[in-house]
Image (cartoon, rainbow, N blue to C red; front, side, top):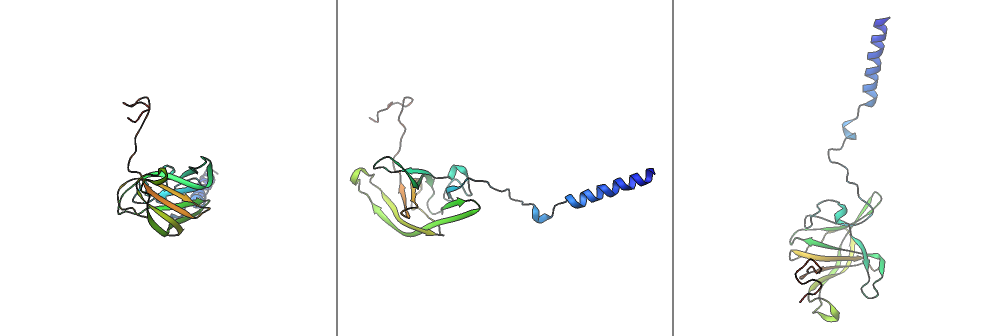
Amino acid sequence: MRTTKFRFMWLLAAAALAFTACDKDDDNDKPQILVEDGLYIVGEATAWADYDLKGQMVGGINEVDQQPRSTMFEKYVALEAGKTFKIVEIAGKQAIEYGPDNIADVVTNGENEQPNVTAKVGTYKTGGSYTVNESGLYHVVIDKELQKIAIIPVPYWGILGGSTPYGWNDA
């Protein structure tokens, strides 16, 4: 009787191993990256080679009336010259890459209270990647309703406040 129980226990243990073992195909060597739905900036020109919540763009605000625009997204991001980056929209399990379509250099010359910079402005299409000519801080804006994109260099920036030498003045 004791031998029968022992054999039965070994049979149960063998069955448990057989039915709970995983195939090699079930295991991914690379951990799954979980991100929220939204627009992301990723690529070798950025600090985020892969999807990261820190690379997610935020809702944009129309400068004229200071109202949020539900179809406009923006991000201030440091970009490295000569390397590529992409704007990718995550919607569920789908990832849509937006690349340049009809991009032109637009010189603002400081007109209409704009900075004196040369921005890349135009339309986008599915697929492709972007580059910048100079490394630095950029304001990247995409408007999905108008299907427009702008990549604007930020040549000057600073911090004002009570803990800075000039307080709330820039003089």
